[in-house]
Length: 293
Image (tube, rainbow, N blue to C red; front, side):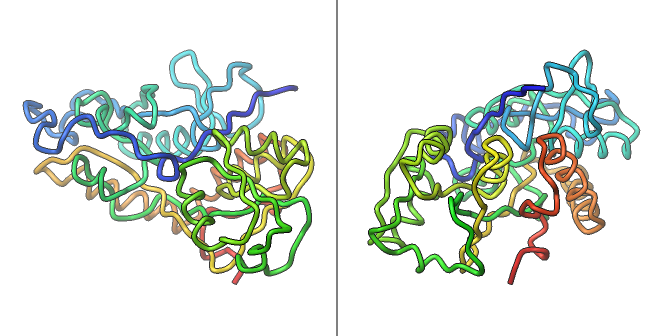
C-alpha cells in the first residue's frame, strides 16, 4: 500500500524558531501543577508535530502492529507509543494535541499539552521550558550515500570530488561547512529537496539525521546510511513546563530512563521501521550503545 512519507527536520537540527513566550511570562496563573492536573483529569496530553519517525497519523488505518488509536485517529511513531506507555503506567488516558515544532515551546507554556517528545533541549529553549535530564533516545548525523563504506571518517569526504547536499541553515549545514571545507556542498531548502537531489543523482550524498536517511532508503529502495566518525550525536529530549512542583519532571525522568534502558524505546522505534518496510537490523539504532565503534 502506498504511504506518504514526510521528511521533516528533527527540531534541534532545524533553524531555531523564535521563542514566543519568555520563561518569566509563561502560564503562571495555572492553579494546578501538571502532576495534579493529569491525575485529576485522568488525561495525559501529548504535543505532536507530524514528522517521521516521531509522529505519524495513519490516515489509512493500516493493520500493521505498532499503532495506537487515540479518539478516531490511528497514530504511529515513537511519540504516540511512548506516550501511551506512560499513560497506561499512570492509569490515565492519552490525548494527542497536534502542534508544530515552532509552536512547541509556546504550547507547553500556555498549558495546551503536558509533554512533547523530541522537542530537543537547546540553550534558547531552556530559558522558557524545562526538560527531563534523561534523553528519550539518541540519533546521529549521517550521510545518505550512493556507495557503501566501512568505518568512514568525515575527513574522507573532505574532497571536491564529493557532491554533498544539505538543508540550508540547519545544524547539519553548519557542521559540514566547518569540517568539510573542500567538499562540493549544495544547499537545499529542506530535507525533501536533498533527498530528491540524491534520487536524481545530482549529489553523491545527503547530510541528514540517521532516522531520516533510513526512512529515505526505505522509500527509494536505494542508498546506504553512513555514520562517519567522529559520530555527531544528538540527545532527543522530553520537554515540559517549568514549575515549582517537580513531581511530573521527576516521574518523567524515571520512566524515560526505564524505557530506554530496558529496550522498550528501541522496540517502539523498530516497530515503526518495520511499518515503513525496513529491517530493524539494517537501520541505525536509537540506543547509542549499539552504534558502531
